[in-house]
Length: 213
Image (cartoon, one colour):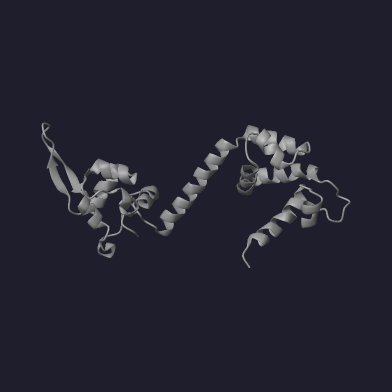
């Protein structure tokens, strides 16, 4: 794994003094996680600074010392405690083990799904499907439903149910089922058919055309 501070390298100033809270905000983790890094040996060079007028003090790190930490040999340090900390915290601290990577992948998918749901909620999906079923092609129907056709197809790729509903609705867009070109790339290109069969036949041809030979 890389040092937990690596992803904040460009935001650490050698002339600045950092508190535990500063580092927590810099890395997007809890104060307890920063303390764990310190006790684990990942953040040496800590200093105790008194707080004027308040008594007591706090731990601080000179920015120059933090930048030096980035060049540490992590093989000499104990691994982060996976029994004590959640994969979310460990990932943010730089752990790239199988479990933490799996958590990150799942978290990313969930975030993208939530964002897609907000941009293309159920009401808009129903509106778009009704338009397509009535004979409006997806590229024309999408703006009427408040989205782009790229968003429609992206959602269809990640949501199996919507993908099936879109395919079923788009059957209404077939322009000439009796034509032998229907259901082929030629039907999409020369008949301007946007029915499900022609669209699916067109997609592989488009990918091949874009792939360098």
